[in-house]
Image 1 (spheres, rainbow, N blue to C red):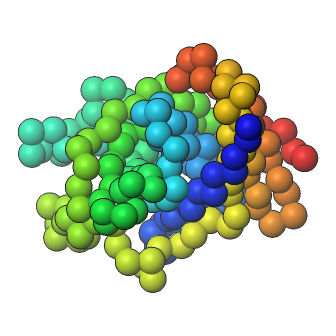
Image 2 (image 1 turned 180 degrees about the horizontal axis):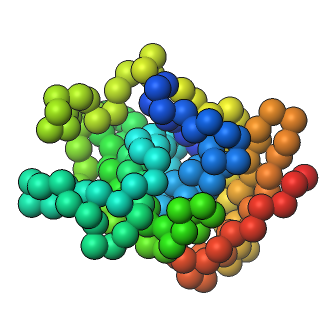
Length: 174
């Protein structure tokens, strides 16, 4: 049996990637990051572009794991509790954003604030939503999953294999 999982992807309104290609790469990396945690997200907030810094023991330092994006996601359960989980999605390449690994933090309330006082998951009025993205999840063929990315007149299809959380997915125009 197959099910369609609609996922909303958000960026800060002031931090929307300049090119469609970069948006696609960030969204693919964000999805792979959430899936590596064995979750089916309903909402993903991509909070940063690729960077190498992290807060470690209260100090801003170069992350020993390397370049990553910071994102927060909500599953259906989290939506009902007004909570989210944040992750770092690490990449082996700044340009291609190939997924390498992820780490996640503990669940937090949406109204939690960062050290600078800004709310981690701001109101939707402060966010830009990427257009129509959904995934097709096939429960019978659990060894593979098709992921559809719709941008304007283009649809990109990714066949994702859970055999390895670090598998590389290839985009194909549909």
